Length: 113
Length: 113
Image 1: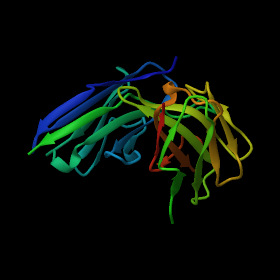
Image 2: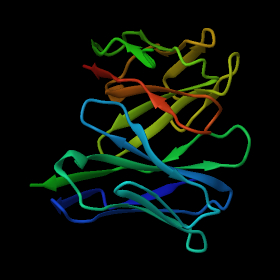
Image 3: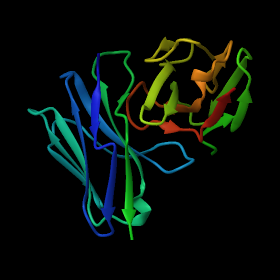
Image 4: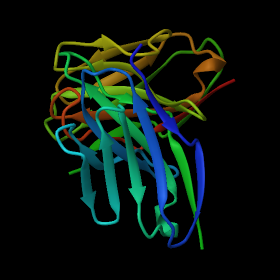
């Protein structure tokens, strides 16, 4: 079964620190890897996404690192802030027609001030 | 522009009762999705509709039915609610199936007693 394995389940980081969330996959047909951010009581929202033809994508303090050979990708949050406290989901899309996004189980990030 | 709207926001049902969760989007998106979110389980896809007139099962379709009423609306029906269906339900939409950004609604918190 297609899966995206996400770790850790929860993460506590001090303000100003680096938060790192990892995801791994098996299906080589995956060709699009987004990250979603969800605040309590809200629906998830797209944060940043990457395609496998690049190894890194940066948007402000958020960076996706992608390792195609290891079939792993990770989200790095630099200078973490209390406002970054949320649940983060990685996801993957297969290039097979008619398939929907596969989500990881999520990581709850708490940034302490 | 309201994005994705869901009704109701909260609902309490007794075991065996039926109900329909409503979802509408005003972004002229082709694809729509229903997810459930449970602690530690992440976002699990129940059903999706790649385009108007089509629906497909996701990861956890048992106990649910869907209707893509028109391009804007995608409803989720519980015919005979069970306590295992206690969850937060999210509707989402995207321009194309699994491509680009998925926009999520605010969620419906359902409790089945």
